[in-house]
Every structure is written in C-alpha cells, then in structure tokens.
Image (cartoon, rainbow, N blue to C red; front, side, top):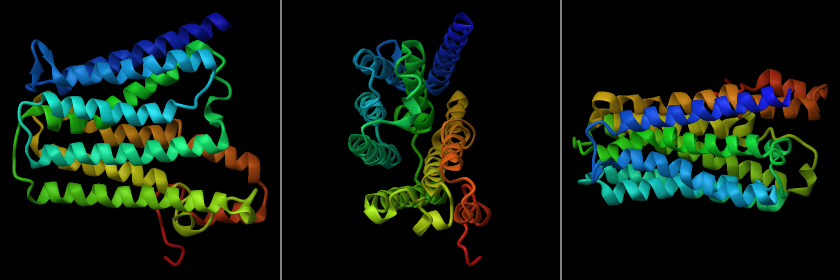
Length: 292
C-alpha cells in the first residue's frame, strides 16, 4: 500500500513538473532571453527551485511555518527577475509587476503573521511527517506561482507594447476590486478571531454575511483582472498563460480551498441551527447581500 502511495506521489510530481515545463515553453514564445535561455523559463525554474530550497530545512524540522511566506517571496523574486532581464518595460508591464508584488507582499505577510500566532497550519498535519508528500506540497506551490503569475510574467518578458486602452483599464479596475475584497475579508476575519467573545464561533458578519468564502472570491477576481490586463499584448503560445484565473478558481473551488474549509466547518459546527441557517442563506463563493 505504501509503495502504491509513493508511486502516486511520484506521478503527481512528474505531472507538476511537466505542466511547469510546458507553460514555461509557451510563455517564452517570442520573449526576452538571457543568452540562450528565455527569461520566462528562467522564472519558471526559479519558482520550483526556491520552494525546493526552503523545503529541505522545513522537512528536517517538520514544519510548515515558512510555506506561505516562501510562496509570497517566490512571486516577488520571479517578478523582479523578469523586470531586470526584460528587453523593455512599458506602463502595462510596470503596472503588472507592481500589482503582483503588492498582492504577494500583502498576502504572504498576512498568512505568515497568522501562522506565527496559531503555531501551525492544519493542512499540513498529516503530511509534514511524510517527506515525499511534503515535497509534493512545495512543488505544487512552485507550480501555483508559475501558473497564476504566468500572464503577468508574459507581459513583462514578452516585449509587446500597446496603449492600455479600455481593456487595460477594465483589467486594472477588476484587479483593484478583487484585491479590496480579499484584503477586507481577511481583515474582517482576523479582527473577528481576535475578539475573545467570538471564541468557538463562525464568522457571519461583514463580507462573510454575503459569502462563505469572500476572500477566495476576491482572489479569483484579481487574477481575472490580471488576465484581462495582459490579454491585448499576448501572442502565439503566450496566450496559454491566460489559464491563470481558471487554475486559481479550480484550486480554490475543487481542490485545496473551499472543500477543505467546508468539511472542517461542517465537522465543527454541523447540526447547529444557526450554522445550518447560515449555510442555507449564504452563497458559497459569489457574494450576495442578504437583502437581495
């Protein structure tokens, strides 16, 4: 049984690496180069390498403490590398770089402070003592960085320039809306949890009265905005990087986001009349004011 499990993990690792290699090839189409190496592909390799580097001491210490922080630093690092080695930068590319870095700084800082207070992340309870599965988590984070930031990296390294226009402005506006929703939702939940009177309760106030996962909705919206902003200057195989918001939505809706949190909430509060009423009256993802 253990051998079969290890074989499945090896298979998942190979799939993750193959997906990263394919996206790196696609995103490099016609883009800037460092000698013979496409800058986009170098960023892709760095996304995995940084996570593997931090994995080693984390596995030895059996801790997930620096996982989210590493994810944020990976976004920042690959974006800076892309900017430094791009042939030219226009307003769109500069905005894309600033948006990725701003988002990564905010989210990684928020998540790092949260785990510093709680001491652990429940997602890793069953895997941090299993090195191969733990390695898969860090590898998937590298893939997550590459895929989600892919459209932005293609803009920075692709070299194509167009005025922002209506589409570009719409992309920026969409990103700002998503960023505000995610930031406000995270802030509201942190404030709720910090109040001793709310110990053992689920949050159903603020944006959380409109959606059971408003932070995830904001995340999907902001990466959609990034894709809209990127789209006018992408060409050829670079267009494959527009998978970014779909990838984010798939992960959050079907894999590691909503399913895990919903199961955890059902286990903790399932059967309580107020919780069951909250579930019936509050959308899972897309916010809907209760008065509507």
